Length: 241
Image (cartoon, rainbow, N blue to C red; front, side):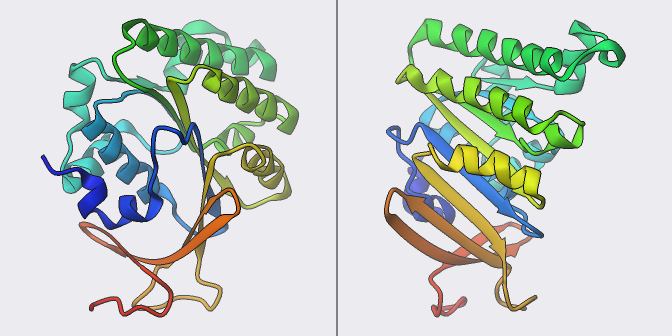
């Protein structure tokens, strides 16, 4: 199988490598950054990485369906034991009484589930372990306060003190609270992928922009969403060349 980074435009633009331990995907206003997550899954599946996936936005079936279009099968990855899905509603219902629980208890329960699975993966020491969270801002939608969400984020990021653990966090920014949470991650991340709608409004040839920041280096791309994938191109470059 060909390395997808060599043939997939999104992955070629991102240039994610094992040294990038904290990857932040910032979804601005009306943009949809889900394609970054689904394409990174393609890379991680190819690399045979172990993945702990906290799903706060879409169902597992959504990622499975998109993955099939991109050429990978998440159900097979689950069956091989390389992917653990953490469904927050199921985990919380099984562990605590939601009606009588504080934000701190909910956050602690989620982190305990994550930490247990990460540790289970680390026992084998056969490959990198990725914690993927999509979409962190939904914790705010659940009524959890900003300090608690930031605390949860920090303990998750602290898992990267082990060089075999990496994190990929997607978070929507549409309010001041969202921005506080996002700034906390962006300050410490190795790579920030900022997905935004066009400032000039809708276009038939461009869906939005993707800014990839790695330290002081910035690379900006435009992207166009199609039914079977995403095409990225440099600003001013022809879409159909």
